[in-house]
Length: 429
Image 1: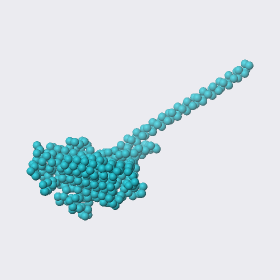
Image 2: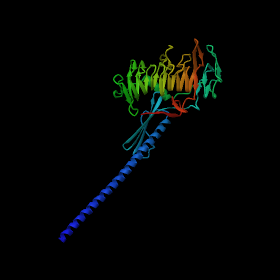
Image 3: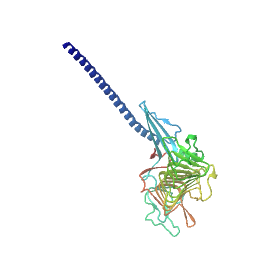
Image 4: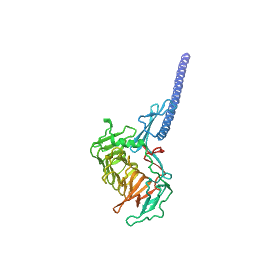
């Protein structure tokens, strides 16, 4: 019995030893796996953080570019062989669209934004009036505050329909001399406007969207641009359209107040925005843009009237109802309002009309005639002002209009100027 007991003792000890050895092996394997997983996750987290940081560097790189790159570019400053950064700069209406893709192994991070020229409301012109050998004349309750660039003749008071000037001083701010030419727009941006109006159409069937069958359309800016094109009139009603979408008509687009647009682009010779429309979008037209009463277009919206009359004079109509942007009373535009003719006309036809109690909070650029009855908070660049009052046309007169820089952010973005610094206007989705 004693020998048998000793045999069982040795067998149990061996089993226990094997069990302990297996347990130690499992623990060691678990520790090794944990260490490997920890190192891997740490490296992945570090790579993800570096992806985000590199995307910011990519955006900064695009802010320095003055021309569009047709293809996606690889940036070669990356040290890690497992990482890559690709950038792409393209037009988005009158602004630019920056797109950056960073990749670490299988992790991909995308970042996209709308870019515009940097405007410093404390340092840049609140008003730039082109040198035309005519002074600026202020009448009524006109108020101008900020840095002002005027013709050699300066500013004086005027008299219209029994009203003189009622302000305490003519300009509330510094006065400097303007030049005989307007600040130049970026040529790539101008060429993009021409392309939109003359050539743009969705190229592939996959890029088309059906406006009739879809009441709600949303397209990410991280995907390809989607578009809708018609030779006939397009009426947008009972719609919600947002994102990377371009809608074009060869005749007219009507936006009803039952439609909400966000970040999209509308292109047509004529665009009518009905009373009470709320949204955030760009309009590019060649003849006329009308904004009804009590509309609210949020930043960074844009109204762009582009007329290529340098080689084709027939594109500019002689009727008083065309060749203009009309913003009715009670409406607010947060962004940019641009009227640009490739050949400046010497007539007295008005290109932009801002009605009484209407407001532009941002930027106005007009190389023609601007009739200001409302308020601009930001900056105005114009060839000359026009006041249509009492059956007469008054050149370089402002009657009851306001231009100021007190109710604007210190830094904001606007249309792209030549060789001007740029800024992020909005991060996209």
